[in-house]
Each structure stands twice: as C-alpha cells, then as structure tokens.
Image (cartoon, rainbow, N blue to C red; front, side):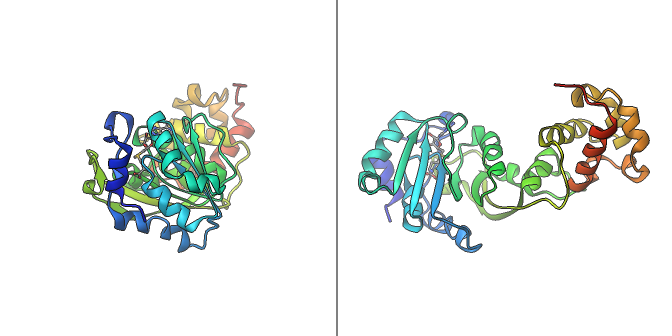
Length: 279
Ligand SMILES: C[S@@+](CC[C@H](N)C(=O)[O-])C[C@H]1O[C@@H](n2cnc3c(N)ncnc32)[C@H](O)[C@@H]1O
C-alpha cells in the first residue's frame, strides 16, 4: 500500500483546513476502513469515495473493489490523483471526478467509504443516505454521536431521526486527531450505515423530514404545543385538527422522546387531516 506521508510529499500539498483538507496518515486506520464493509458482506464492486485528497484511502479501496469512483473538488489534488493512479485509470478501475460532491451526479455505486470534508459532511451524508447503499463515513465525533443517538438522550434530535430513517447506524471507531495531517480541531468518528426498509410507512418523505425538523425546533414543548407552534414551518392550515385526531400519549411527549416510527405516524396523520398547504 502507498505510504500516506509519501503521497502528501509527492502531491506537494499541505492540507488546508480552510478547504476541509485533513489527510489520514495513520496506516492502521486506513487499512481498517474497508474492513467495515467486509464485516457486513457489502457489495464492494463499485466503491464511491467523496474527497479523495492525496489518495491514501483511494489506494486501499482499489485493493478491495473492482471499480472506484473518487470525487475531489480541489483542482491540484484531482490532477495529482490522475497522475498517481494513472495505471488504475487506464485499466478502467478508477474514475476521478473533479467536481463538488454536492453538485455532481453520483455514479451507480454499491457502497461508499469516505473521509468526508467536515464543512459539508451533513449535506453529503444526506445525499448518500437516500441512495440506500452501505456507507462507512468519517465525521466529527460529536456529529457522529448525534447521528446514532437514541431517544431520551441529549444528543437525540432531527439528525438522529433523519439518519435512522434511512439506515441502521453505529459508530465503529473513534479516531484521534493525530491520525490526520494537519490534525483537525476535534476528535473524529467512523460510522457505518446499513440501509434499511423502515418498518413504518412514510407517504411523503419531504414532508416527513420537514415535520421532524419543525417539531425539534420546539423540543422542550409537548408535541401538542409543538404541532400548533410550528404550523408556519409545516404549512399545516389545520394544526388543531391534527391535535384532535392524535393519541393523547403522543401529544404529551416531547420531540426528544419520539421514535422515528411515531414521527412517521404523526406526519401521516398531519397530511391526512392537517390540510397542508401546497409549497
Ligand atoms: C478530510 S479530506 C480527506 C482526504 C482523503 N480521503 C484522506 O482520507 O486522506 C477531504 C477532501 O475532500 C475535498 N473536498 C472538500 N470539499 C469538497 C467538496 N464539496 N466536494 C468534493 N471534495 C471536497 C478536500 O479537497 C479534501 O481533499
């Protein structure tokens, strides 16, 4: 495997934190990341990597996949990846896309392993999660903890519900700052997301996610009050009708005690009787 420090030296770049560039330099971490897909027998035939950097992780992914697509926005780094991995590109094993991961059309990948640019990690995660593929992604520790949080904890929130709506998620590893060059300000964590079919119905995904977001803006209020107080966000013209139709036990809860399935049931009811205005 290529030595991560040697890659940085050959690329002639120093990671720029202002451009979300923290390169992994710990071989053991780099070697472990693809094994989190192997453990769940994920289809690794076409791996997607967001933010290729100098290619230390790309190298490990090429060792386990038939095909890798890497998206890298930085012009100089994308040029370096094309140069460094010329053979793999010529063999048709690697595609380097020089573009913004938030804008680009994603390929038909089977799984993703990525050390995400932290400034846009949430936006990228919510581009990847709805694709329904296994994901091994690096985030800031605190963000990862919110993604996997359970109801009735201080970390539980909109991020937990919307993440867990798409996947079963767990933190598989915490990564110290020293594993990166330059070291980021905070500790990192790797999450593994295994897509799941929710055991509840959601009629309108966009509304469901907006509804959850709205109710969490009132996390200290009961659901009864939160439904009424957020009608301007949920665009419900008849929030009182939702309150009248909902179960008393749900109305007395607060958002941070609600399971994703309970949000889903309430969102269905809101669509049914709450007279949502066209948006
Ligand atoms: C945290 S570094 C990871 C680099 C490499 N994968 C590693 O682990 O060493 C994130 C990479 O994403 C790139 N990047 C930042 N914002 C991006 C965006 N919006 N789209 C694509 N790449 C981006 C940065 O240039 C940087 O190379």
